[in-house]
Amino acid sequence: QVQLVESGGGLVQAGGSLRLSCAASGRTFSSYAMGWFRQAPGKEREFVAAISWRGGSTYYADSVKGRFTISRDNAKTTMYLRMNSLKPEDTAVYYCAAVGVRTLLGQNDYEYDYWGQGTQVTVSS
Image (cartoon, rainbow, N blue to C red; front, side, top):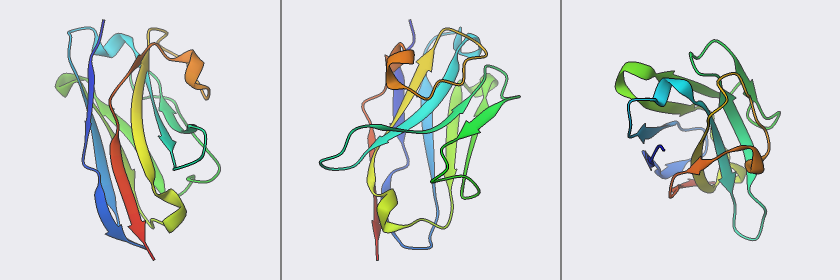
């Protein structure tokens, strides 16, 4: 099993930047592909980005492509989401997730086995 804890959320003005972190417990972090999802009030949870077990492959939702960067440091058992040029529509609770399939770049929440508790990101206009 792996336990996930997100951090780094907060309030930022439009055009600003934030970096989210997802710290994982367990020595098998490098065996998991990882992803970021978000859920805005009144909306369904949606895919943001995914990264393979070594970080060699990534995939982004069209809405964040070119603005967000997903990365991971297996030595630190941590995944990151660098968010630039933030927009009010990026406001949501952001969740990290893990799946025990190393190369899966899952875009659906049902493809992931483990979830963090979420961190709030609010972008003001």
